[in-house]
Image (cartoon, rainbow, N blue to C red; front, side, top):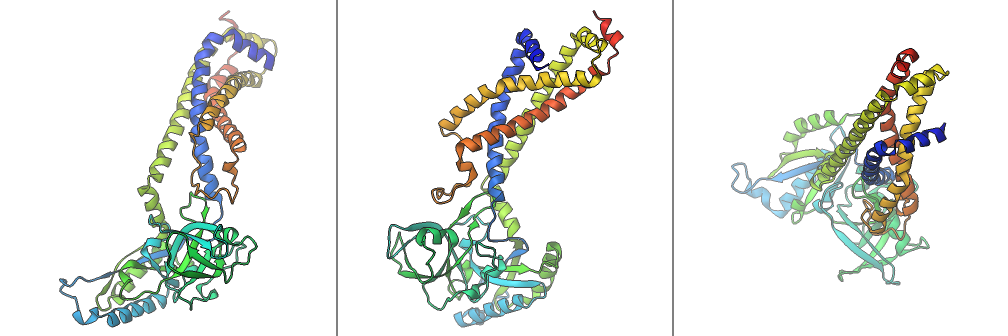
Length: 431
């Protein structure tokens, strides 16, 4: 039957030519979009050693001097430090709070700010790691708030490391791989590759994280920065709520109760929002959200367009082939056989365009016109599936074929079903 299908397609090659051209064009366009979503979903599936769920950014404001409630006596460094400690203590003991941390605003988890640094081993300066700096107050538990783990899934706490030395630092697992391939990084001395700000001592290792959910794992360096009157405006309070409370319940109760409790000295509760929302807002600001929406709309448009094209083609084709269908049914073909024949014709057309489409797509790949989303430049140390160009090319083309195949099934089903229900005598009447 397959041979007969291709003979029929060849005999109607002029009528099929424009369908093949449209299938070829849409196959290439869909492949480009499918490749984007394949890499996007792959990156999202990469496990990270940090969890943003049930975490909140508590933003404390300071009254300006012109405000009627401003208290000059509470503006001294000693009073500011004491009041800030009272604020932290009240949040820490709030019923729905599991853990609390003070973080530099430039390191907001899921936020758009990025503080990049490069560190190298003092003993072997050829070993250099680039990553994101994270500054937090070690008197609070940053790692517990965001449920940090080691690479093997063991929970991590800030108290697991010695922060007594001013130059103490914790690195992520990937940083350890680069700086100390033998795994002996505890106690190693490292220095800033870009500026001379002293020698740092590595006190521990935590798992790797992703800056954004759609990116790959990255290196991170964690350094102590104790909150005081000089830098409080640059710090934010991070809170993890208990999992027994819903996010909506915690948000409403915290605003109601702590709005009054945190009005200490010249401090006041300016706002609270989840880090998950901050991450979504950052995606929107960076154009990621709109990019996904546009590509999704294009994907649906192309699929709908090819469905209409194929459906119209087969509808017209069945009108001029009534006698053939009637003859087949009169000779014993069942309704299922008629449907099968039409579906095979549709998939035969799709098969014809696969190799030319892959040839055209290959030119895009060769020209470097497809990017690897979330590539942080460290792919030389860790291999990901999207970096295997040939395998990625085959997988994304298979996915594209399945998408178009599903669209063809939907498009052909209606005319095929109508043709299969035609009575043989009625069909032969058109002979």
